[in-house]
Image 1 (cartoon, rainbow, N blue to C red):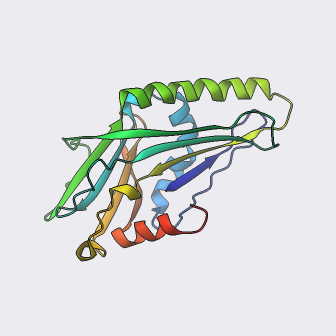
Image 2: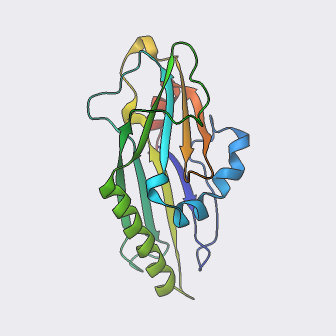
Length: 195
């Protein structure tokens, strides 16, 4: 899971942590730094993950990425943790704003399900409640991550093929490259300690 740790301003200092820095393009760092505002103010219907893979790669049946939200108190028991895994579903057309996949490659594009969009909005409300309740008290941390390793086919022939993840938080902002590496790199990150 590529994770972004965002600590909110109302007593929760802003920070950005990339759990898996390898594979994150330097040109994406400014966009990642702006993720807090984009995710917390944006329309969840516009949120999308696009994955460019070898055309032979077929995700396991039922596999889909999840948008993971973890709001935890810094001080044990200060508030109930808010942990959500919001499922995405595949869409069949790659937006024209994405670069050409190239020969032997294709795009897989995912968006939040309608239920996940509603849960995202509830998460936003819960975050606002925690900010208000904890004003002047110990805060918490908000981690927002994309779990996409379940999409990776378990096929040794594809282990060294290239994998690119692109993220869109709003239609106006468009897609930006989130991660780039091989299918094997993606699986190794998923197995790394602390995941």
